[in-house]
Length: 253
Image (cartoon, rainbow, N blue to C red):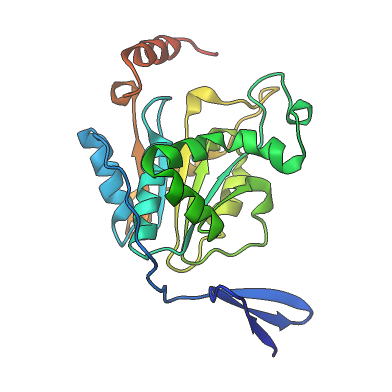
C-alpha cells in the first residue's frame, strides 16, 4: 500500500480501497519551548488546571457561568501540554450559532474572514497568555488552528489538544462527533455555559446529557472528568458575578 509522508513529518497517508487514511505520529519530537504567562489563579482554577495536565486525563467536560475563565484555563492547559511535547498541536472549535439577529452572512469579508469573528475568543486568550511573536510562530507552524464543529466528522485526532468552546450551542450529535474523534495521546476540553444558549425555537443542546452520563466513577477511571464552576467562581468582575447571580433567579432568559 502506498504511503506518503508529509513535509512536517507529522503523519503518513495510506490509500486503502480508494480512501485516504491518516496515521499521525505517536512519538512527538520536542520543539522550541515558549514562555506562557502565569496568571493569578484561584484555588479552584488551579485544581482544574492540575486535572487537565494529569497524564490519565483524556477528556474534561466543564460547565460554568460567564467570567469563570473556562476558555482561558483550557487554552492555558493546552499550551502547557504543547510546551511539554505531550500534544503536537491545538485545535479550537465552536458551533457557528449566531448569538443575535446579526447573522454570519451579513458580516463583511469572505468565508474565512466571517469565521474569524467566531474565533476571536481563542485569539484573545492566546494574546493574553503569549507574546505576539510566539502567537505568530505557532500559527506559522500550524501548531494552533481553528475549525468549525460541523467539519469534525470523518477526522481522527492523535496527539492533539482539542478545545470545544460554547458547547451549550452544540447538539448531542455534534458533541458525540467531537468526542469520538479523540485518538491516541489526545485530550479534549468540552466547555459550556448553560445560561448562555443561543439556540432558537426551543431547541436544546446536548451538553447537559453528555455531562450527566459521564459524571461517574466509571468514566473517571477511563480518563473522562467532569468539572463545574458556579457564580461564586466568577473572577471577571464583581459586577459580572452580581448579574449572573440575578439572572440565575429567572426561569428563562
